[in-house]
Length: 271
Image 1: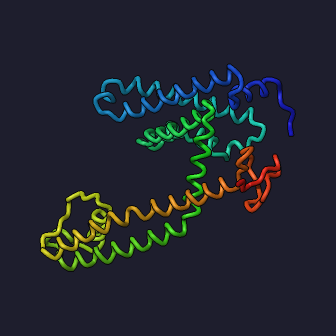
Image 2: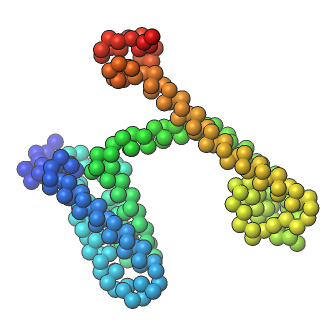
């Protein structure tokens, strides 16, 4: 590993750390700069604003892009493990925060992708020390991952249902009532089953309307199933977590079936 200069060490503590006044100030300024950048992207999409202030918005966007580029280069330069940072989540987001403006030079219209900078606002959890919220988010993601097989089976069953319903509606209603093809009829079945109801296609026959009513009622029951699957998994994981926590000292216990806490010696199942 190459020797790191004193400047690199100081910049690393400012750029990546929040335990110094300079580090906190850097992060706060960065967050406000990100908010300004996102606001510029939103304003640029308004036609009246674009016509009147388009030149100034473009200049401001390029100025912010240059700042984000310099910040990314500095982060790479001061990182202890550059490859790890570049391939990390925040490293990729930091890179993507600057790329769209450069890509817009060759592919017009891609500048709006700079809205991805909003993801960088997640650093506020680290800056404000809201690590509890990030842990809760990780618990939710783990619950979703553990439920993936049941959710996949459920999704396939729903896909089969809308295919059957769509085909039946195509045969019953036909092109005269807007059901011009089976894929379009399946689209109607998805919209109806999810209780969205755009209204661009609607059944006209009595049988079609009766079937549509049944699909709508079925939709209310189906929507609750994924929520129940994930909720049950969250409850199960929470029960396991509480069962492996000492009720006396609150320390975590690696063995779920332990009778005594290895930290304080208290019984894991007090009377």
